[in-house]
Length: 228
Image (cartoon, helix red, strand yellow):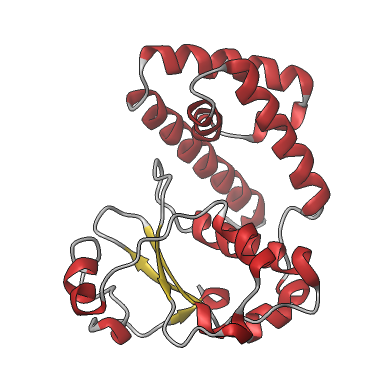
């Protein structure tokens, strides 16, 4: 192989791997979709691509997610999706949130990841008592929420669309109150509160003991979100 650089080969292999993963995700999408959903995914894709060429980079799972959010109404789902793309370009112009943009929130050490649960969903643990209103205001906390969600999405196996969140409110007080920040976060999250005495047994229904945080009786130390 003398005289042949490995870089082009690596790039070619990486590209092929991404294409294979995308194809696998698309195949999984259609296997898990009804005939009506498959038809509307194609209709919506054709429409949004004609309005915004960047939508070609979005997989069918994302298209289906917006369709389901609007009861398979192609017109309403498309309008919602195009607004999302416009928002993402303005709010995340570089395509990602840099830790340097949200250093204050990261320093509070309030969100951790814990691997995957029994259904293959990423696990995240958030401590309400460690959250304090950011000096950067509502937009600063929004960027932190986007950063956390992007981290979780990057850990999702092909075909997975959900994650499991544990919201720990022990020690939460008035000083932690950040109504505007909470509304920004809670609008896209579902939280289940569990009685403390039933906490471990309830969590173990969804999480292997090896992945359950040690503070809840499991075996895994907390892993800061920025290190995941």
